[in-house]
Amino acid sequence: MKANFVSKKIVLALVSTVLTTSAMAQQQAKKASSPKLTMADVLKASQASDWRSLNPDNTLYLELEKGRVVIELAPEFAPKNVANIKMLVKEGYFDGLAIIRSHDNYVAQWGDPSEKREFKNASKKVDAEFTVKYKQTDTFTRLPDVDGYAPQVGHVNGFAAGRDPKSRTTWLTHCYGAIGVARGNDIDSGNGGSLYAVTGHAPRNLDRNITVVGRVMHGIELLSSLPRGTGALGFYEKPEERTPIKTVRLAADVPEAERSKLEVFRTDTSSFKALVEAQRNRAGDWYKFAANHIELCNVPVPVRLVK
Amino acid sequence: MKANFVSKKIVLALVSTVLTTSAMAQQQAKKASSPKLTMADVLKASQASDWRSLNPDNTLYLELEKGRVVIELAPEFAPKNVANIKMLVKEGYFDGLAIIRSHDNYVAQWGDPSEKREFKNASKKVDAEFTVKYKQTDTFTRLPDVDGYAPQVGHVNGFAAGRDPKSRTTWLTHCYGAIGVARGNDIDSGNGGSLYAVTGHAPRNLDRNITVVGRVMHGIELLSSLPRGTGALGFYEKPEERTPIKTVRLAADVPEAERSKLEVFRTDTSSFKALVEAQRNRAGDWYKFAANHIELCNVPVPVRLVK
Image 1 (tube, rainbow over the protein chains, first blue to last red):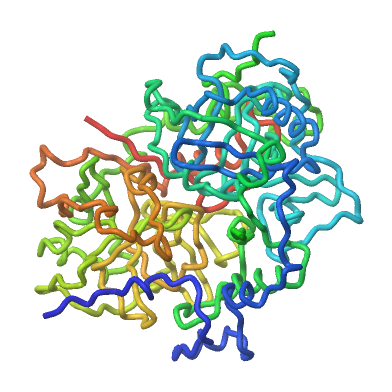
Image 2 (image 1 turned 90 degrees about the vertical axis):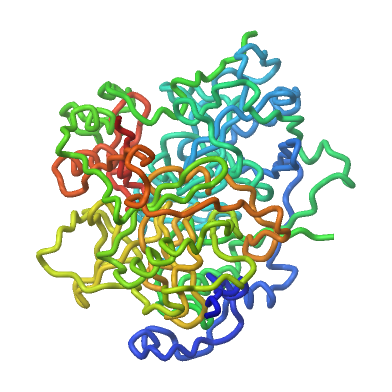
């Protein structure tokens, strides 16, 4: 008897261009009667104006042996911390340091394992920027979906963010790929000399407890697939287990020909709203039950390589 | 100027036994006035009766070159699929197969890349068990927290689950480490011959769309840290990129001396409720803002090795 192989092409398919024709009546009833778009449809129909380039003045290249991790900084959410990180980068602080921690389902973290490297012009202490004030006029594409960690959630300039209308504060959330400033118990004890990237299920409990400065736009798999550290909290126990950092550079300081040509899907457009809706209730033959919901950290903000 | 190194021991500390004395008044006001427990406190105070052993008849050992992945099956949620998987295991179906897919922030999947291996007694088609009926008397430790994907969420026998009281159905959720039965577009096209483990942010949109049969109890890092596949959907493009599976065995068929001695924290106890509360509003010096919320897939269900 031949094995019933479940084909690669259809297993757990994420996208499809075909309208569902599920035979399951009660589930079909939950689906809209008009043809629905998949994320692939939305992206295919997108215009040049639906995408934006990364600003090289706010883009970092973390260079590892296996490739480049591209990080977009969000100075509008953490101006002091971003400025200090950029100063550290300009000083060459990170060059030759290492990824010192890989904690399964949590974070990868880098910094100075020797604890000896000096700061030149960068500050040793930087004010906490766990939240910042927002103006009513600031762009915020709010998700209609309920969220347990924040009164409001949505996207600002491509970043997943929370908002509290009472205090008029906003903050970047700890979704997959978020970059944060490691700190000790004092709120101003972080300075950007040690950063982490979220590589597991979103630890939203960290929101408003630590300064988030941006997110990984490309190359997250170079961090998320690192062997896990076997020490406490996922720190590597032996120096040779660490992944060396060749350099961290600001994209603006890299010759244009060597820059990663990335574009990110804008989050202040009707196309983005269509994309969110496509993910909230998936079209296609595969999905039988429509969630009619999307959790903030499951909203994709696509990034593409351009020529 | 000496660098302000953020010590390993305090950076992003997850647990602490000290009550917070944060100076930030508005945040302190959000914290309870009585000493609060950390997860470490709860675990330290736990009794033998707070833990249970795994049933060897429902435990699988997925043996890879680098170690063993221990999977607990949940026949109460997917009796037919679990029975078929156990039959496949007994037939030696998985021995010598491979992990064929590693999709960043999503799943690792294994099965037969050749599509040629035969089923002996196991069935090629198994009924979908996306949800099952529950009885009002079934144990369910409900989380008080809001959830966008299910009317109710909580834990059943250590498994994170959703519930719909209207239809009296329950299902296992796609939290980190969940094991599901890959399928094609037909709901009964899965049979357990290809399984996946969630290795990223919980894809809860899959809930009620596919049969979940259990979860990884130990060794998830052997799956989550695999190099990502560069083909579509994270499939490996070259056979040599795949990770070979030595064997998959039922624990009951493994000599007792070779079994993993694991205990899992029970989820039907007051200790578990204390643990959830400890995670909902973290104690310790590090946390400054109390979330007063926990999302289902952030609730830990601890597993320990015993002698």
